[in-house]
Amino acid sequence: MSTTPLRLVPVTADNLDAACAISVRPDQQHLVSPVVKSLAEAYVHPDVAWPRLIVDGDEPVGFVMAFLDIAWNPAVDPADIRSGIWRLNISAAHQAKGYGRFAVRAVTDELRRRGTEHAYVTYDTGPGSPEPFYAGLGFRPTGELSGDQVVASAPLT
Image 1 (cartoon, rainbow, N blue to C red):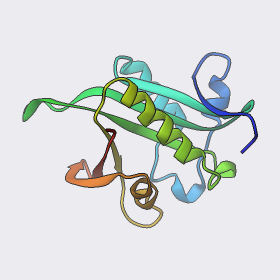
Image 2 (image 1 turned 135 degrees about the horizontal axis):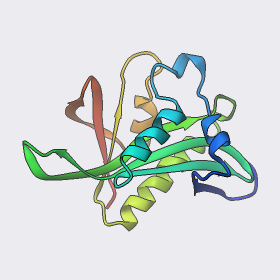
Image 3 (image 1 turned 90 degrees about the horizontal axis):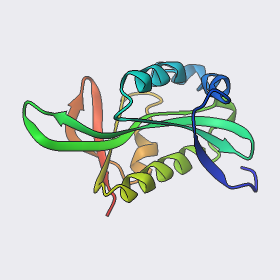
């Protein structure tokens, strides 16, 4: 990491190409969708998507997208409103340098600022799973599944 503070910045016309160029390692590509898909999802879900480029100095090193205030399962419990990490992509060349931890902490700080009490994330299990990464940041499985992914949460209070 550089001595310049890390920051999250909105994805704009000026940095769109840099955001789309963020790519995880080949062995991780089955675990996380590419940034371009995230941006398409953000476009069609503008009320709940919070996409941000992770920048170190002037260099884009990753992408994170939060989801904000989604009714998790409205047919079962319409009051179960959740926010959390929707997508996290750290460029293959920049992994294991603390950028992912920074991004998750920055998102959870934003959620806390918005009054959220728990952050959520979903992930695949198996070889290469980000489960240990999220567990190290305080996320614990809830016992739920979202499709075939584990749902985990971390308290923000």
